[in-house]
Length: 424
Ligand SMILES: *Cc1c(COP(=O)(O)O)cnc(C)c1O
Image (cartoon, rainbow, N blue to C red; front, side, top):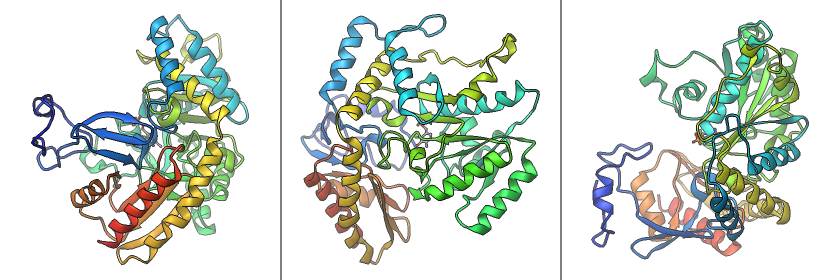
């Protein structure tokens, strides 16, 4: 891998020789683009080009890049204390953030455990669920997950991702064995899931699902009614329900949290991605009161034995508090709904393209699914030529822009997608 440019910055080639990139066959991949800085919904490259960002840096930058309010909060916290260990110590940014998250989340989801990445938050949620039963004298070691689900890349979370998309075949024998179900989207699937749960209930700690949208597994939507049906089954069989809102949380679906659209309260919820508005790594696993109470005891063995070194990172918590300020002060949910309207109209012309299999929009998520996986390098170049940063998931081209994107930039993104899809 060397720079495709003659005017690459001097750090490019020496750096690229030592870096290992995500989800990348290093031998054949196109070299990454050198970014000099970001601004609002733009990514500025070192060679002077400026790209409109269609995916908000893996769905994190909800308010656009370099939002002055978040930057000021980080700078202010930086002067006082970038970080301090969370064992035996605590600090104001975490105290405030925990209260505010509890306030924004529905029901009694009010006990917040902070970590640094989404995968680790899911691992913590899994440990909470398993130990919830252990502390009550029951051994329930399995999780029920869904086809096309994605919950992270660590060994624990890979075992609850779609086995085909997660490339489980490489790791057979390493991954724990859990149980995959189908989302109860129709009466037959509902009955099948009911039977599956009845069969495995004494083994199952929890059901885990990405509510309303399965993100990395292909931006697949399901209804609030499907989610409610799932929640009813979990209650019926006395199995905990974990909602992984790492992607859907913070307005992406047009609701602050997707579970609010279905009017339900999971036992545990996981958050990350847009939690700090795309500035710093931070995540949380948040439990309902009855889950927490199973740990609250005089027995030291009943404690939750987990503690990331950078737990409740003070800069991250300050950034997250500033991001929540923006959600509270500005109409982000209204913006998400306006984006949904604009995308519903703007992506419609793609539907008649020969290569197009489906067009769908939910909140600030617009999807054009192709009939077959495109030539990704060719697609990347076609988007770059139009000044756009769009990165498809296999055959799924999607837009998840910042919720603050202006209508003109969004229009350029959608025109680009439609042009490129029509040219396939
Ligand atoms: C991105 C994502 C994760 C993993 O988060 P990381 O920070 O990449 O570890 C887990 N669950 C969902 C739903 C995600 O979208």
